[in-house]
Image 1 (tube, rainbow, N blue to C red):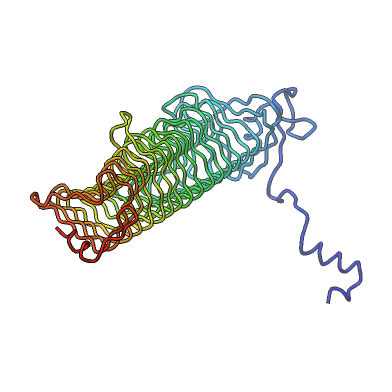
Image 2 (cartoon, rainbow, N blue to C red):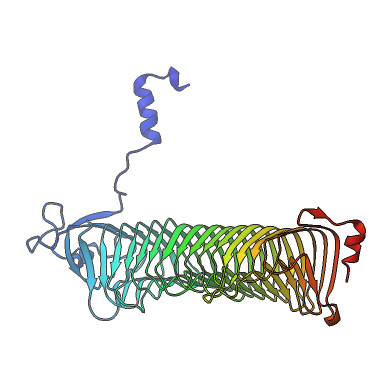
Length: 473
């Protein structure tokens, strides 16, 4: 139909459908320049000298205030619907206690610096920040008591170690995109329930803890944490989702406390001081996890948790690849290598105590201890399991543990492929033992150890059916 219209009519249709962007009719515009002569009227040609005068002139009306480079002393209480648009050198600052900005309603800031004060901005309404910088606050950069925070390209810089960049209280929501948190913040982002935060494409460099979440829900995507002394991400009694997150250093890359529910996809940790992931009474689904050079608590440390771990790689963890206590675990498609403690005398690929669960398609290589140790009534289904060059041997069951499965391969260990040193039980359908210094198995029958192997291959020679039956103890 449009093709049949005259050219002028076509232009009229598009002009009606897409009006040009302009200042809303109810939005006043004023200009401010701290270097201007006194007595300005607020126009572009004769700007106000102070921001306070511009806010007073605007009164309770919605207004867009254009700020030239300069220092603007607060504190300020902008009216509902105020927009402050500056240059990168427009600085809003306050001295003493209180907040630099306490808006009466919604507020939008673009290209300004908020400096000093105990708090940068305190609000319970909608707050929109674009290319804004915060520095010098003694307690909080942004305190969101309620409402909605939308921040894009914001830089938070800490000058004191006890400060927090963003605190999100109950019933508030925050979206942080492309933001930077730098310096020794105690907590860069703090979330309290019931609240929600979304963090995307952000960088945390130096905060003790990047995200501290108690209840509520959080989603973190394409984000990097580095240089902190505490957990990069902490969650308790809330739901947390991590996607494409990288952590360098920190005490823990991810720490989950009681009641935490976490989903992880593509997560990496390098050089965690204690553990890459530590979960206590938490529920987690973890996929594509990489941990390199994690500390004395191992790559993954579980206490009383329910965990599904898929497609993982742990390289050179200290003491443990994975340590589980009183947990339900499901591990698959993973590799653990080069596990040793600082003394070089201990280091288990996987150690489970009081756990239940399954392991499938996992390999363990080059550990100072065993490939797998199951103890303290652990019940485990173990399939397609490979162990290579582990000092204490392949699979060990002790203290009433029960391990059953099939398709195990154990190579070049200094200990036996399978060991049951006391009251415990191992049942395996098919096992291959190659070049293990102490052979296929060691069982202390007198102490209650039990082993049943249905079919075994030892150093390339398949045992006969009768020989396999004779291995039952």
